[in-house]
Length: 306
Image (cartoon, rainbow, N blue to C red):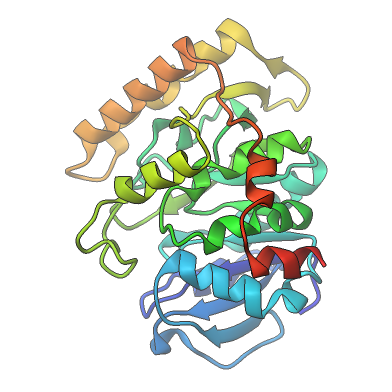
């Protein structure tokens, strides 16, 4: 294990994480992989780039345990990604996504999603006009963190919520001078329908929204729409704001037909929502979230900041 970049995956028996290391073009692998398996079938022998541990149970609770029990290992890295095990990607894409975070000094970021992915939000879909968009939200599916930012947001993982904490963490990054982004130059595929793992993550007699609204209430926030503040185009120079940025979100709208079979109507709605939010809303952030999170009793955050 010898990189500045670490990916942590909560892996089940059908995890796709082995594909992330497939290297058809012999590109050097610029990340290590910590497999926090929730199913024993995902446990394999360690290699030079892969370390395995067994943590059964739900996703966010598992992340909390990883941060609590393995932070001495985690803090040897500069950038850490939490990627779901149904994300299909490769060495080149993941290398580039880490590099974008480093080169643009990002605090929290994520790759965009291919148009044939299962997606909840139209804003998450790749917009080929841009290299990246600076946004007020990064979803829980595949977030990348600067180490110092992960330390600041660590209390969120111990709150007992399996959804909703991703609506909070960009506000924390913003208050401490950080930047959040979605990387359009790097696209991954989300291969499993949204909500297919609900029972495994404890959503048996409740919905995702139950945790979301409790989390938002705890921090006195409203649900932030996913809105870009600025984008950098493929030239790497031109910055897009205002009307050009608003109109750019028509591109995902025009590609709704590429959604997985049975999801095209929901994709059309998500794309229309994205267009409406980008045109009519300003990026929203919570207030005094860093102060509120400091008041939370959380041994994990104390250990990580020590």
